[in-house]
Length: 134
Image 1: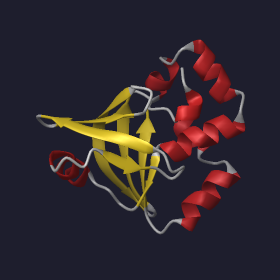
Image 2 (image 1 turned 180 degrees about the vertical axis):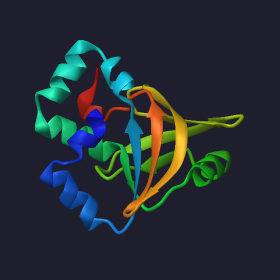
Image 3 (image 1 turned 180 degrees about the horizontal axis):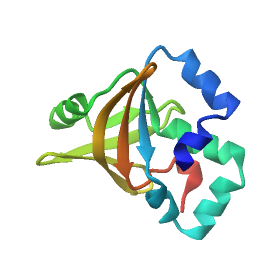
């Protein structure tokens, strides 16, 4: 996937290695391809912009879907990403949504995939850091 391929960047690997556990929100290729052309081009043509996007989709610690839902229900409405920005967390019925400060939303489609450094969730939609406004 586009996301997985981008994770091979050395600076991203160092950041992941510097955290004991991380949670990663992985957007699908189709979600990335649905972004406006200008946004995609900007991300594809700048290692710094793509790195910023990836770290925005990572949170320190292992945060499973149950924890996200529970925290959201307790009115803890945001989590801090590895690039120190906030992602909003909302729930409706059994669905957990993430929202960036630009208003872009993503739905957690599949969750709780464990790997040696933490956990990842597959999201439909792309949430963007402030510096990647569409």
